[in-house]
Image 1: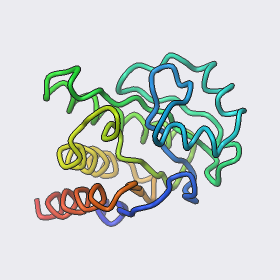
Image 2: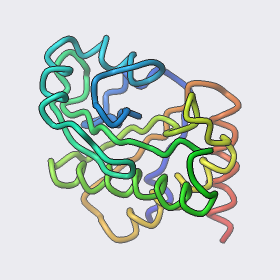
Image 3: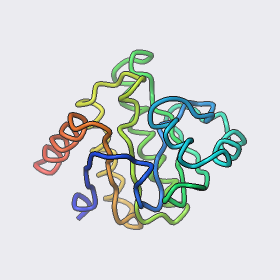
Image 4: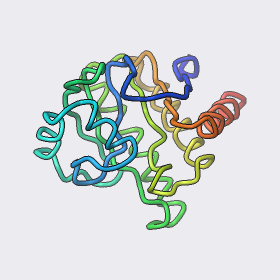
Length: 175
């Protein structure tokens, strides 16, 4: 049942019409580069003001703000691990926690649809194929327990990232 609720696409997460989008944030929640900067620019200055009041956000945790100028009602800010700052096992644990805690926040605010970027795969250096497997497994496991979320979009910035996520989902469904 849950696997049909996971969809993978290439695109701009700031344009997603999901109830909530996830921001791959830094612990200060102050905006930065990559998807974080794009979300802050698209949402407008009110997002930064609300997010700053919630900081800091520890790695693996998630905090929610309104979406402001975005199509999404909510932005869930999560901090993924910097890959080379941890052992591979600890990095995997923190990345899975970022996905799970973001989904918990989405469920808490009543979001039926959630869009994720490929958390930690940009400047945080997480290998795309490894991160994709962790993301798909964490989302699938969560959805098997929580039926309030109807759809999870894994929105990849590049086609190679989307392909890594597609392969991870196919592998997960075969298991």
